[in-house]
Length: 516
Image (cartoon, rainbow, N blue to C red; front, side):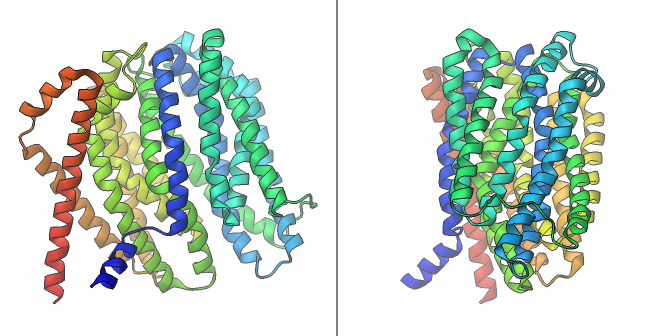
């Protein structure tokens, strides 16, 4: 009995490396939240923060794309080349790939420096003139450390490839700490310009830490960059498809921002604060899992261990969905309290809080699909099925854009949130269906059934939550200020987890009896 219980607990947990990496992420999150609280207090959700959000989004545009392309195309190839190339040839290939991708980044950032005004006015024509002016100035300043932003992404991928997960995982802590100190030290004298300064300092430090560790352990070396015979063609073939898919997906991230520039002042800032919370959930719940899983999945597929890979994916996705669905629902029902506690102070007033919390509750409905998509996308990359990701990315963009067009005028920011959540959910469903059509040997029908059951449990949990009478005994707690607000948040979240857990164990019990 004891052995069976231990075995069941182990099946319900992630790998030790995932848990350790998630622990580091957990340490970084309070720092990140503290940074956002300071930003909300000092800068609110107004014109200047809108300008910074716009500028940083454009600078990180190419970095996000190239980082994803490098990870998706180079890591599977690097694992494959381990069996056919010597160590020096592997390092030469790695250096060639890094240099190849950096060329695109430098060209784009030079374009931002000299053509930033044209880009901002063309992409965001509805942006208020004063916001555009500040955004263009920040864009030119942020473009300089933008090269290092990309280099950090590539170096982290190198360390993850060599299972140095914990070193790469400590970087968010470094970034958060430097940002926190810079805001506190320079906000009074430099205002919002302390944020671009913090970006520059942080990424110099991150690049130094990662490069030293990679060089010291032999994962990076001063070897002449050379592509092995045929490698350049494969990198271009795989990379071009991933590049196109990532461009489409990154453009999709600008859909909300583009529509938000035509709404009331502060809408763009509200999306920025919401993205912080959404990123936090993805980092805490899934990023560590995706990083470790991608290396393992790529190795299993390279060794043709498809059934083992299928079981591995199904087990981790089951654990993932049972964690992320109740977490997302807790944030949905407690969105008001979360925004009040974290951001409503200083320049961030009650109107900003209402707008942000209302949109947050709808955006969070798409979080489970976003998290699942992180894993599903990596399966496509490991299988080197890059062209299908292009069509799926196009579906995601079209669905989100059409939904936004239909809903934004009547529902404002809520319409953007509903459209985004719907688009990512449809995207994940289609992705699983297409993977199933490949007939790779992985049992993706079982994966789809498991995810579907957990979504159904989530819907029943949300329905049950609204049926529970709670207003009369929760509202009086709000009069006790932040402590009362936190108590309401905790009670709401606990109720969601209790309902979901009860439904999960009840359905599991029924299924076990049916099998017997």
